[in-house]
Image (cartoon, rainbow, N blue to C red; front, side, top):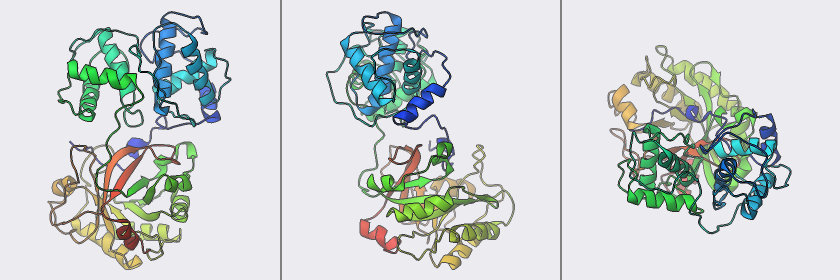
Length: 448
C-alpha cells in the first residue's frame, strides 16, 4: 500500500539528521545523560578502557558498530574484551564526534555513543573495509528459524543485526528488546526485498545467511533508486531546516541534483518561512527550480484566493516563470495534511481548475500537478480533467518501475520515489525525484 502523501511532514523529526564534528560533541554534551542499552545488553555504563571486559564492554563494542557503520567502518568484534581493535575504533569515533581522543570510554563519550548508535550520523572521514567479524552483536550464535511472536536472545541478535544490515537514514534502528513483533517482521521483509529473497517475514536459513553477511561487513541494504532515470531532483520545505539550519544549495548541486521543488504556500494563510531564501538560492546554485502550493479544500470555492496568495508570495522572490532556471509552478493536490488521510472536504475539480487557470494566466506557464492516481480515483472520481498538465507523481513503492498514470494522462514529468533521501547540504531527510527525460528536456522545461 502506498503511504498517504504528506509532503515533508513525515520527515520533520529532528532526530533523523546527520551531524558533523564539533556539532555532535555539543549535542552529546547537551543530551540527557541517562544510560541507554541501545544494543540490549546492559544500561550500566562505567568508564572503560583497554583491558576492560564484561557486558558493558559488549554493549560498547556493539554501539560502536552501529555508530560508525554509516561512515563505512566495518564492524569490530563484540566479544566483551576491550583490546587494541576496540581502542582504535573508539579513538576513531571520538575524533569523528569532536571529542577528546584518549581511547577511554568515559561519560561524555558514552553519551555521544548512545546518540550516534540510536540515530544516524556520519563522519567527515570515511572508514575503510576490513575483515568481516562473526560476532558483531554478541547476543547469540544460534540461528534458529524465527517468526512473528518469537522471543529471546536470538531475536535480540536478529534485531541488532538488522540495525547493522539496513541503511540507517532510510531505516531507523529497531529497539533491541528480544520480542519479534510487527516492526521486526516488517524490517525482515524489507531486508528480504533488498536481498532478493522470499518476502515471508520469517528468519530462515537464507535470511540468516544474508543478515549475518551484511551486518558483518562494510555493506547494507539501501533502497534502490529508480533505474533508467538519470536526472535527480529534491523537494524541500521548512522540515528540511531542523533547528533553523540552512540548506547549502551549492553542496546540493555539487552532489548531482539537477532540480528542486520548493514549498511556497499552503491554503489561504501559510507561506513557508524558507521560501524567500530557498527559491533564489537554489536557482543561484544552478538548479532548475519550481515553487509549489499545497491546496487545502477545507472551505468551499477557495481556489482563486489560494492562487492569489501563491502568486504574490513567489513573485516576491523574483520568480516569473519565464527566467532561465524557472520550472513551471506546481499545484500540490493530495489528501488532507492533518494525519487523517481523508479527501479534502470541499476539494473539487472545478475549484482546482480555478487555481490552475489563475496561475497559468499570471505566469504564462502551464502549471504542473503533484498528485497520485489513487488520490484522483478516490477523491475526484477518476477525473480526466487534468490530462493536459505535466505531472509530478508520488509513489514510494520499490516494486514498480514507474508510477501509475491517472486516467487520461499519457506520461509523467517527475516521480517522487522516496520520502527519505539524504542529500549533501540538507540537514534532514527529504523527498526525492527523478525526471522523465533527458538533460535537454529538463533545460527546455526550465527555459534554458
